[in-house]
Structure formats: structure tokens, C-alpha cells
Image (cartoon, rainbow, N blue to C red; front, side, top):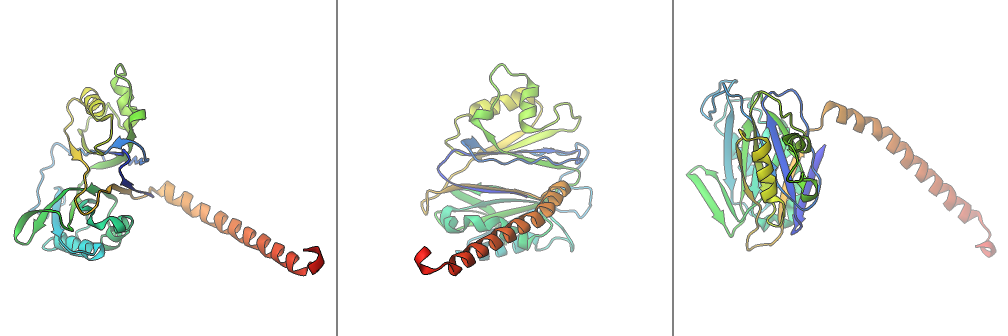
Length: 286
């Protein structure tokens, strides 16, 4: 499982790439001075729509909540995004933006979204000075107040990859396109279109180099994004990312649990023996 929440003013970066071939998932997230990027690619023959139940199309839906408590805000935003959609809709992607009013609850965001939308495979987002989303009355932008916006999506045939990039990882100016592809874990020779969504901390020193490198290596790719920010309620910026673990990762986690439990039992047994030996010692020997 990939789950990292980054708070404070340190530089951070997250890069997500999406390859519409949909055959494999590569996700990486590490903490450093960086910029955040999320990328996705769409099958060229697939129409984009939010008004059809055709399984071959993409489906997006969003809602924004003003609730002061994060748990209630997530509940309201998710319920609003799901309302009116076809029964059994199982969104795979959640893009979330929230105000810094929830700074004390940042660490709970991923699990709360997972609980309410069990079908999710990818979660990505950040804090923002202004939070934009849809309400029952139409689009709304909220500033200087608690707000949480959740966009849920189903992207048939799209492969999503979340990658965290630091300024130290960036290839130099003379590096070939393959070096940039290797850094991102993207197949540069893929016939499917690859696009990028970038989220960057304002203090990420390599933003210009990163965007120039992506333009050089992926000249046909669309690239969108922005800088993370915070509001007057708290200066703590944050970025969020989670990717569903692969079957191999799940098996590794399951295989490691018995060994960890055995180690814990051995440690507990050893501590118990030491305590018993100490208790049996005559007082004069202590």
C-alpha cells in the first residue's frame, strides 16, 4: 500500500502518470523537496462524458462540502458526488482538495475516503487556498473557510501511476528522453497517449527543469497542474497520495505478518523471562 501525507513547508513532489493501455500499475511516492505531478492518458477513441452510463466512457462527478469536521465533510462530499449516478457505480479515482482548516485531521483523510468508497484504487490531492467544487446550486469556490472538494472518476482502459520526484532525481540538461522516462517509470515507446497532472510545492526548486524535461521527452503529452497552497486558517500545506497495493505487494504483506507476529512473541517471551529472573534474584544481589 502506498500512503503518504506530507505536511508543513518542506519541498515536496508527486508525479502521477497514466498510460491508457491499462496493463500494469507502477506507483512510487517518496518524501523530499519536490513538486507534485499527476498524469493520465486517455484512449484516443474513447469519448469523455459525465452524462452517460455507457461503460466505454469516462465518468466524473464532484461535490464540495463546507462542514467544519473533516469526517462529516468527507461524508457529505462523497454522498454528493455519488448522488444521481447509476446504481453500482464504482469509482476508481478520487481527486481531493481541502482547506488547511483541517490541519489536525490531515492523516485521517485517506482512510476516510477508503471507508466511504471501497472501490477506490487511487487517491491524490492537496491543500489549497481556494477550494472549488460543485454543490446542488452549482459550482462554488470557497476561501478562508473549511472546505473539502472530492471528484470521483471511472476511467476505463486507463493506467494510473503515481510517482514522487525530487530535485535530486531530475536528469541533467543533456540527458536523453529515455532518462526522463526511466525516472517516471513510463514507456516512452508506448503507442498510447501519456499525459501528466503535476502538483508542486512552491518551494520545489526543480519545477522549471521538470516541466521542460517533460516537454522534451513527451512533446505530445498534455501537462496540467498547479502549486499547493494553504489558507489563513493554517500555513501547513499538504499533499496526499494512495495507490491500491498490487497482488504481489499484498502477498508480501501477508507473508510478512506471521514472521512479524513470531518476532513479537519471541521478544515478549524473552522480556517475560528476564523479568522472572529478576524477580527470583535475592534482594542483596539486585
